[in-house]
Image (cartoon, rainbow, N blue to C red):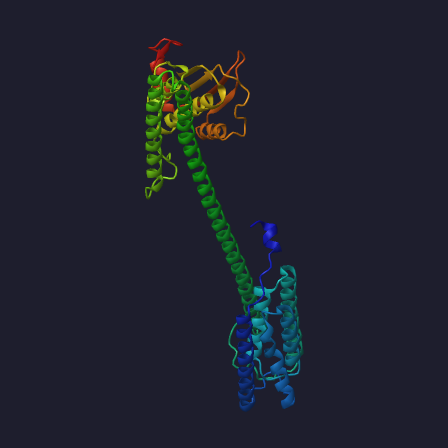
Length: 441
């Protein structure tokens, strides 16, 4: 909460329960004040001078203490009523002073603790305190001339008796009003801090809920990518093989049987990958940041190329540079990018040539998949496969390029940065390998 927000914050009003408590406290203090008045009259303790009539004494006692019933609901009004009644009662020499003084203390405290307008609360309290000291000065001034001659006969201190009595009264009243001001301000600050803590806790709960929602959404997107990659690729291969089987069924039964065998193997592979993925998703306590299933790595890219060959493409794969072990996430991303590129070639390109290249560079590994098929009908920026590739590559802080080649056909190129340790190993291996020499897989 900023300074401006703190200045603008208003403490909520009292609850119905707090209002009931104030009612009983106000009535209780009033009752005790009436008891104190009865005792003072019985003891003849008329310290302020000859008292007024009995009904007037009762009136001033109730007028000072009963407003505490509304001390938290209308604190400013309560303080003004109590302060005016307190000074008027003393001016009229009402004998009850003890509970009346504490009623004034409570009213001052309530304005500090519950006053909705902080500027008004400060000004009102300072004004009332200043008025009380002014009244004290007036009282001392009027009372000095009425001090009996032998009132200080037993005084033995170094300070003149009248001055000592005045200084003592000022100190006591200073502490009295100072504590009322301080405790009221402390209560308001404590309420504001409690509000800030509750607001922070609520914001934390919202942040946690948003984080959980983002985690669920991320998990759904990740599952969708895996399902798309696994199902789309193998179903595409099976579709191409089934089409080939249909065309050669009558004139070349051997090729038809080979196509059916490839369909069977591809279906089994798809089922195996789906089972592995579902097994990881169902495993309790699995790491949310780990890949859903280690169903493909860069070492298995040649299997993708072999499936493309079995589907009728003249497919080649080349490895350039010295291969180094890749982190599991980078290796799986490389496999999925190549898998999706090969799937798009089988589904959309009507190509007969496919070239896959893997380049191990100093600080990154580059994947290059190109074909000689048609560019029309390819999945655009909104295609799920291309979106999945971009998400996978972006998760590795890599770069993906996909689009038509200048000489015809389509090209997908992804560059995945390597961790420092792997990059160092790649650079070291590169010193002993010929740059740009292809290593056929």
